Amino acid sequence: MQSPLSVTKTMDYNIEFAHIYVDQNPSEEQMQSIARLKSRTEQLREDGKSYTTVILIDEFSPQRTILDVEAYIERTKKDAELDFVAFESQLAMFTYKFLAELPQELIVSKKVGNVETKTFVNGATSIGLITHDNKPSCTLLIAIWYLVRFGVYGIPAKTRKFSSSSFAAQRLLTILSKKYEDGEYKVLELLKHTKFKEMIPRIEYEFF
Image (cartoon, rainbow, N blue to C red; front, side, top):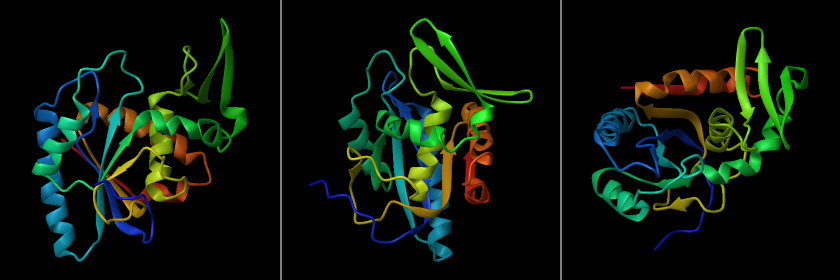
């Protein structure tokens, strides 16, 4: 039975792994991520560090759904330690709260039809924030996601919990395919221009 959400203790690490979109089926990418997770958590246990694990499922940006979410969760629970599953659409509730954290002079708004798009522009750096379809960009949502994992923003209500572990942590470890690397550095660029910039050294990656 799913346990009620609670945060009673800050963990040393919040580890994200096996990220997946609902318009794809599990592949070698998720299996590699699970293998990396097992290696890293073994080392953390040897070092006496506490950790919690989470999968973020993106059902926000895809236009179709082919993933059997329940089967994916159950399969992953058999293959790895899984404490939480979160859903990317639930992060959108913090969109304007995060936008208010950015220097407003670096946000460029543009009217496209009935939608006001927003872009973070700093010199040669340009990062989409609100897209032409009036949705928060993936980069913006992942910046929010980091703050949720740090415990700055609350855990979205539809997050599912499978253990007694707490969610928030002092450090983040994200295990991802290298194809996401450029996007992740855009997230750090956004955070660098907020009051949360001191958290950046506590964000770790393992790209494969």
